[in-house]
Length: 341
Ligand code: TYM
Image 1: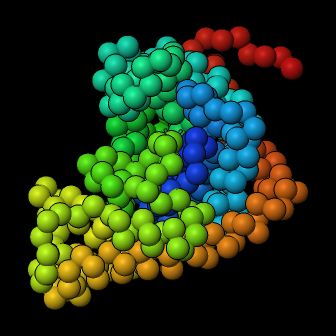
Image 2 (image 1 turned 90 degrees about the horizontal axis):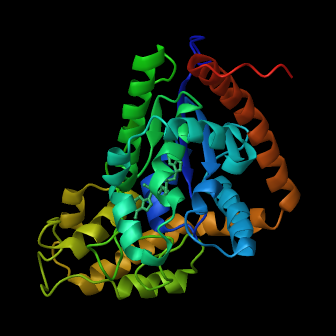
Image 3 (image 1 turned 45 degrees about the vertical axis):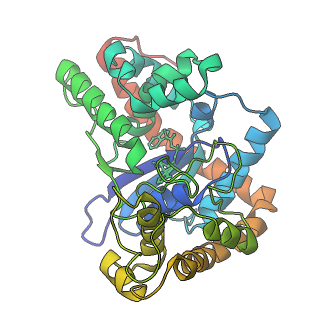
């Protein structure tokens, strides 16, 4: 409840533990979650079932899932104020995922950009889970009846499909699901690879100099920014926001804006007399200072296994309570016989 005794609006999101969290995961998603705990009832999870759509080393997946939780907390998600849990600990996700598979059309799933991209990249492992992934994601969301789903630009299409599935179900069976809105940040919604500014910075790509991870040390971060691809302009006026013709510079400006809170105009003025040799290290420095406290806190929290276990136990208990209520309602509406025990 808020101060006026009206129920708080609900916010929910998740991240797949398929790789080390990047600056993209932080600026596009987590940073925007951390500021909302007072205002919203917030649920954030590690999408470990989603991670299974690509092959993982089991020990790495387990380690990364715990590390991701520690990084959520280090990024400012207070476990007392946010419900933090593992997707696989709340089996209602898999159950509602199956049901929603039956209300999501083959044609809709075939149009998903992420499916097309991922199947092109992993031609040897185009599994059924990769294809039906958005139905599980719809279940993740709809179980908690959220008002908003804060995600980066690349996940907007999945949230829109979730809305369509929710509306379809509601039309058939009467009001069952709240139809949520995607919440996309104004800056940082699409952080691009530093060496290839036409493709997204991704945590599951090969480790390279084009992506910055939350746990990178400052010297590595600075090196990556000094090598970031820009263009052949130089000298005064070369730092200006023109995503179409200057994608590398636009990406660096987005990152700088998201880390410092400055507008693009302010950034252009700040660097009006400078070349890339000054601008790139300045962006590196801003990122180093943004990530420093996160890296230090995460390293401390990762070492405390009991604390992490306590967080995800309490989180799963609270999440299960809410998820079960929605799933019961769904089972009843579609005609499944109620379980008597
Ligand atoms: P995932 O794990 O690929 O990414 C997690 C979140 O980080 C955002 N993001 C980025 N934002 C800006 N720039 C980037 N380079 C960048 N890379 C990632 C993503 O948009 C996302 O918000 N299917 C989801 C996980 C998921 C989920 C859900 C999200 C599963 N169930 C329910 C919301 C609600 C995914 O693969 O995100």
